[in-house]
Length: 118
Image (cartoon, rainbow, N blue to C red; front, side, top):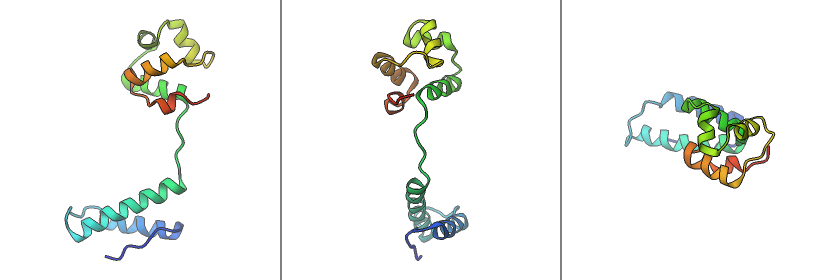
């Protein structure tokens, strides 16, 4: 097992190919250890070179509502009046701190996402 740092696109592709070759390796074996270390290196390279930004707060709310099978009426029960929900989802009203707390608690949307400007 010879593992090298991933410094460029060529190293990255080579690491992905190796990962594919040993993907089914058993934990605790030499190949399993290589798989674990290679996964960490690939993850680090991807996070540094292909970062994924946080989603827009309103889009995150809509997405979570869809996942939970919620409609605007259901969301109104969480954060207040139905007309207020409509204004928020149409970006005509900003989220208040109280709404952010309720959305975080009830919909499990991270506060880091909800406090962003939109």
